[in-house]
Length: 126
Image 1 (tube, rainbow, N blue to C red):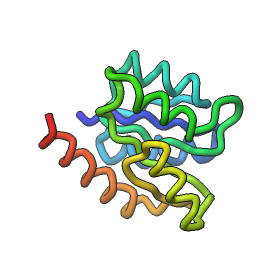
Image 2 (cartoon, helix red, strand yellow; image 1 turned 45 degrees about the vertical axis):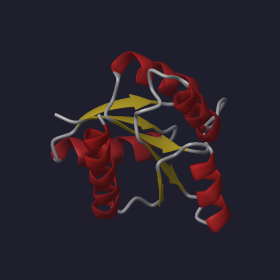
Image 3 (cartoon, rainbow, N blue to C red; image 1 turned 90 degrees about the horizontal axis):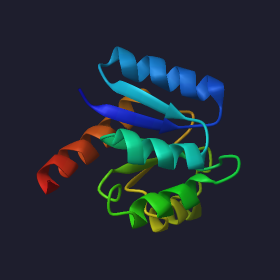
């Protein structure tokens, strides 16, 4: 079973994503801020991370940079999930180390396509 980590501070967004992804057969872990997300990634070793960028305390850009600089987590694909939908926002997320970018509100079909592409690519790289 594919293990996902959702790093999202908004409870409604977190609950919606958890329900929808669990129904599709994913094992879902959650974290509410960047520091918690880093800890969960290091301890739980998810197959993919869905990272909100606007988080309290440590934002998603910083958390992604830390994860991508750590040899134990750099291989985990990170999808930026954000309401920031301008081209510069996408570039900023990719520059921070995110492997893909998707906007909120989440369109679940599109998100799953992005996740599948990254998961298949990650399996090939192993």
